[in-house]
Image 1 (cartoon, one colour):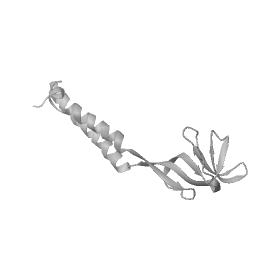
Image 2 (tube, rainbow, N blue to C red):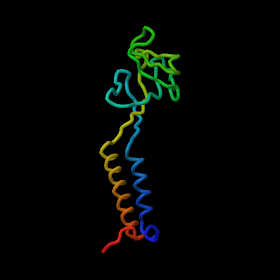
Image 3 (cartoon, helix red, strand yellow):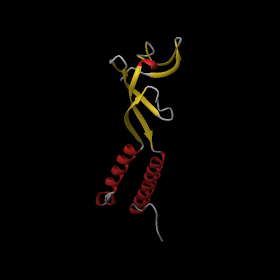
Image 4 (cartoon, rainbow, N blue to C red):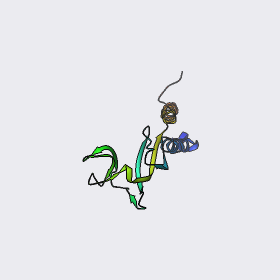
Amino acid sequence: MNFIKNSGVIKIICVLMVFSFAGCETVKVKYVDSDDFPSDRIYRLKTVYLYNGKNVDLTGMDPKFKRSFKGKHNVIVYDYEEKLIELKDISSLKIEVIESNQILTAVIIVGVLAVVFVLAFFIAIGTGGFQMH
């Protein structure tokens, strides 16, 4: 265990853990018009700004966009499908776009596995687990 105390192994593992949590997913806040939904991305609806000047905070109300709901088309349902807002009444939306970086995630996973393998190898050599002749 002297190997672990004298080297920066613990620091390296901590830095890799920080990067693995920070690099995998990014959340960006965007304001979009009602006809500019980012259909190719994952997003969370946060606030709806209506043409009449009112704002509806959708945080924690399970908002979802639906093409058709209870005879109406292009609506946002919220409050566990109890309330709805038609898209034609919305001037803009505040959304959180969730983006993930698959390449960075793969590099971090491979890197962590490599570090664990190298550490296990050196610990095994240091404790006499492998006998070199």
